[in-house]
Length: 176
Image (cartoon, rainbow, N blue to C red; front, side, top):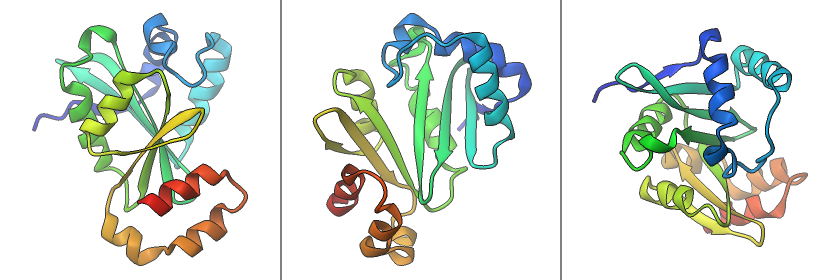
């Protein structure tokens, strides 16, 4: 399989800014407000230096067409993915997702999707994620290496770690 992702570099700052503020893409983000460049620049500097964040550019014939990012939490990764509208439904995002997951170590991936964002929901289901809903959002999760997760953490241990965070996360783990 041809590699269609690459880690971000400083040269990708303007592309990420433009895709983040693309009207069709921005409306699907949890925070759909327009981002100003100064704010983006601060975020980008933190992202590029971080050891707990993985961000990749999605390429088609060496052209930048999207991004996929992971933000490592205590024992899971928050995922964010966006691809330019004209390249959606081409299968490239699924290939990029599969390739990027190889960079992650025995963990859980969690996507938070707006209830009305049917395209993203379908994308994650198609790529092997399980769905959990609450009244505000849909959550999609996937075990990267299910056997290692089961052997390393019990539900009780996870609950103790996450006790300060929201109840929905525990519901996801119980169903899994």
